[in-house]
Length: 416
Image (cartoon, rainbow, N blue to C red; front, side, top):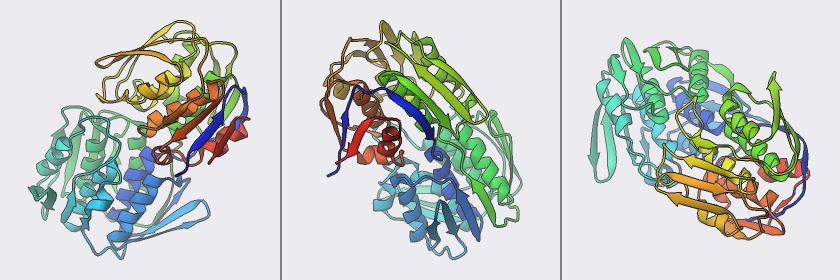
């Protein structure tokens, strides 16, 4: 089984082109179902989660193929409405296909989704939103059997701004009669990117990026080309890597505003950062300082996906940083692996206290989940000696080729 080997202690310098966003392209791939024709996705990252979505589309009777850096999807031949258990278990976001299939065909069948085990992430809000549009959803033998022959638009108020529930409700509402108003919607940039794709194929969606989104259903669709937005968490990872190891990096194909809370924390810790026009420049010299208190929150707050990554960057800092995780209850599974490298981290419920240490040491560690695996990459670059990271399939869910990108900055890192 492959692993990543890092010989730490090298300063990093250079330029990195940030890949397309995983959390954007996955709902967009589900949304391709809404148009019975062809779409072209540019900047689509080649990830295991993307491949899982492609396999779902192919199972449904659609076609998808790569042509260079573009992914061509044609759903005109879609002939099924069911997703088997083995494909649903590949990733949590597979549930996003539910709203799209219902909007296209009026019925759907699938099991509950899989993905990283970050604690309870019930899909109750997804199902509640679809029921409000008129869908009938029943659980039989561990599978969801859903019918929605006459969905009608209405106001739907989410109890919390769930990203997945927002996306599922938008996709289902595209197939409902009349207008749907989604209140307390998630505001993440990836939802705005989904809106831009939907508008490109002819759907009428407005308001993404705010807490109220309006969808006019049953619009005539057409073929389109869409470029996937940059991945802000991949960008945060490479910024954190250079902050931890020291050096200078320029990120290209990145939105500075989308990373404002991450760059603010790194700036407080002592990094020099500037950005604009699709780029960010970071310079890190000497040991970092404390970043104070970092509290995860829905966008525009500090992203939970960047919590483990920033934590790894601060392991050798001078001072103490407090992390408060408000989104997922099991988002500190990476901490035990960081302890193996000499980190000083104490956990109390959803609070993690990181006290900087003078040195980190290479160790045999394993990725516990996607972002925890990225944290080990960051820590390995700052550690003395050799770090070997196992279970790298988690990392491959969200990073196209981190070894290539970090090696281009001067890291001593290889696949083995």
